[in-house]
Image (tube, rainbow, N blue to C red):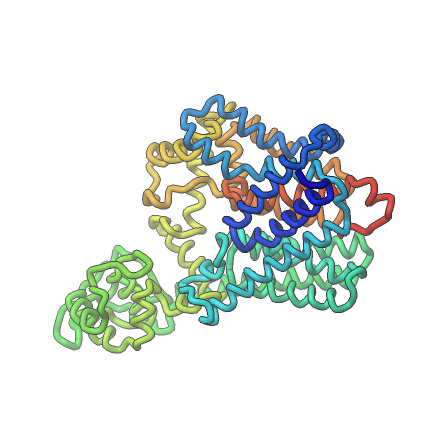
Length: 529
């Protein structure tokens, strides 16, 4: 319909927009993806583009991942579920075909794409900071709420790629001038700061691994020993600081400042009897939560001070009475009318919002997140129900996944039956998880095993690794960075169970494969980021 040059221009604009929108809008990313597909269909020249695709065995290997999901329809019973799964995995078809058959992708285009992606991550970061400052109308009840556009775990993965791409380009790319390099260094620092405010465990662990790995790369591959050692030292310091914060949180959780508060009392100041629940071991800041409780007084005084009834739920969906008792315990107070009367207006708002400890009212606080993790681990150690706790419910996810794999080791359950298989396995294994928290594996390796069986899981991983290992640029920093992020994040995320995850994987993987196999780029001697 249009000239080949016009189609090429539309394609590259879509490529830049997709990179920019990945951390900003799933809906707009899907729209741009459809425009890219329509442009591909209208351009024609299918025989030429098929020839380009045949010359890219790495791209064909990536396409085989989607073929696996199609083949595994053979043992699927839930075809509506299969259709939903395939819709999420459309990027596994779109980007390899559109980019793998395009002409003229080289170092310059890759650099522009990375800059567009970094810009999108800066927008997501800036929006999160503005929400935290109260400039944007978003209620921030926990650090995950700072991810305004995509889920926090996915944003943390995208930010890691953006941070280290920006850092790498600022240190090594001479083509953009000093102003661009300084800007890239500054935005890398800002995104790193936001990543640590987001407090995604996956994101922070990934950041430390990548920082240490980047230092090792600088020291060994680029012979910049001082820079490399500095990064490795920073990674070691970040690890030590994180462990220290966790150890401090564990100590705060178990060692009260005033141990005498945990002694049982008989009567309140108003002459009413306290009730004690010695079998309950729940603590806040070292104080026993269900010691010295007078619910009669709590109900009366709370209903006097708040418009939210005592016998209702807080805004987080928890029993308000439990939130109140935990909050009072965290302050070292007996649970009676005097305790409620002593609460400030800010304390009342915190409890209404579902904060069971004043620490939780500080979104982005490392102390609060460390305390939350320590609290979850302590409750798991006591055998408490892990429902709703991101860290301690994951073993239940893994137990369900391994149970399904053991029942279907050779062929898995098929493309569309993954959700059904998890629901049935949770019902069978007697999990303590509440129904709304009976989720999938949150581990792409296990999800491969559930879907395809063990041989299929091995085949899927082989298809993921072959394009990288067979690429000319397999040892380049950008490729090593991307593959490291993918392989590490797959331990804690169902990468292909979301449109954003599948898009990130197929988009950048395809782009890197094509860039490093571009003969014209090699002849021009352009330096690939």
